[in-house]
Amino acid sequence: MKAVLSPLVYTTLVILILFGIINSGVALVLGFLSSVFLENPFKKYTHTLVSVLLKIAVIGLGFGMFIKETIKVSGEGLHLTLLSIVLTVGLGLLLTRLLNLDFKLGHLITSGTSICGGSAIAAIAPVIKAEARIISMALGVVFFLNALALFIFPSIGHWFHLSQHQFGMWCAIAIHDTSSVVGAAMSYGDEALKIATTVKLSRTLWIIPMAIFSMFYFRTKKEKIKFPYFILLFIGAIIANSYHIIPAELSHNIVLVSKRLLVFSLFVVGSTISLKDLKKAGTKPLVLALFLWTFISVFSLAFIIL
Image (tube, rainbow, N blue to C red; front, top):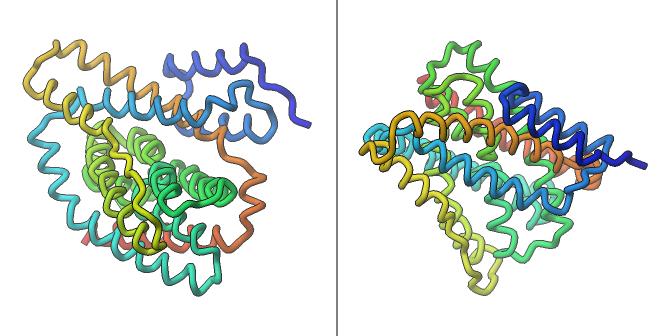
């Protein structure tokens, strides 16, 4: 029987995070520990909170970016993005059959690994009519690997002496979920954060062709595809900053608050990782996810370095 995490304790942790006292890695661990040992008093609002926080934070980061460098970075990452998605999806479909894994579960894990973690899973799930149990298992596996990436990627980046630009690009390609991408990049440096955010958001747009492919692959009726409209606001923020529509000091403060919100979102994401869901999934989904993640990480790192 779990103890209830009191609203006061929860609020205290949130305040510490928003004041910058707790960093991204610690926030994720605290969130996970609260999921394992304590009952979240705001559990029913958690998934909505993650979605809203992440979108607001990402839009805010746009006020620290400039349109010329954004277009340049997006163009540089296009070839690697396309190649990594095609290869990872193809490998995922093959391994799902070889492992004799549930096709929908394998497809969701593949989609999450190749594009953008939980966002891709949430978008593809209704298209292929996946059950809640399948969605939960896919999210559990992907979020678990996201947590690992947040801690090990910066160390690997320093070991290979990756530049801020290289590390930001690698994070955007190899880490599944946007929250973990920005968390890892933020710990590496401001330039890495800008590049990772830009490339990752351009990568998010691939949810749309992936959803269309999924409809044909599973022969489902045409479902409504949700376009990530917050990306338009992110682009609007970049334009506003590029043409100095708002004061520089205000832009700086918006970016600072956005970074704190990203750390808070990692705490909330950590609280959604369920040991029960991971155990229920068994080893095959984890094997698939780990293999795909290793492939895309090694492939993209080699591509960037060489």
